[in-house]
Image (cartoon, rainbow, N blue to C red; front, top):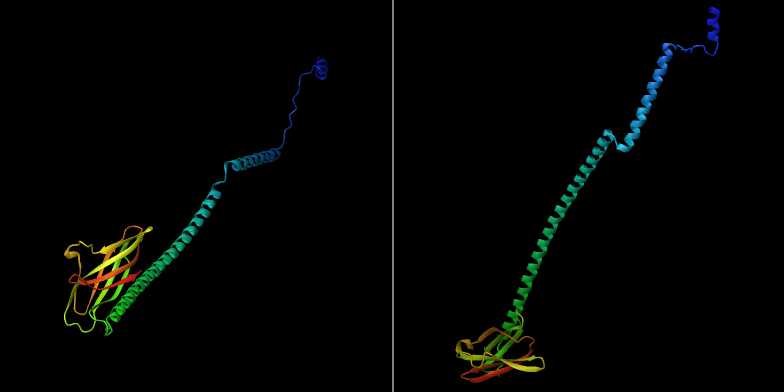
Length: 244
């Protein structure tokens, strides 16, 4: 019986046998360490791979924020420096502009003063005694020039009694302005022939008298000459034409 059982165990129909090897605990610990290390390395690789897609980590973000804040501080400091320079330049420009305006005003005032002195000089030169051959009233000077408004002219007339007058001269002044407007010539009387008494250019003086006034020409008109006539008692005492 035992022989039969032993022969059955050696045959193909013998029951399966599992052979298990038993490793020492130190080998198992080393193998476990390698397995854990491999798992950790795989986890780190997966983390780095995922971070390359997800973006920088917190430390990199903080470093970038610090760099940007530093650049912003530098930009603000540079902006404040340029703002201070711009303020200084603007203040200097205002001072120079004020000085230039003051110089311009002074120059204008000096120019006006020079013009006034020239007019006064011409006026006092005109008051020099006339020749002994001249008697009665004389026209010493007449000027006509444009005024500020368009087509408006201003005239200045100086009349004097020659010699040593013993009484005042009483009379009036009439002006005849000859002007051209296109191909035609016209005459403008100042004052008008039928003007009332209050609009007449009256003369009443012993030695001299200055008369100033203005008139308007038609648009596009150009003054050519002016005839100045001095009348007394309805009679012409003297007249003189001035070309322009």
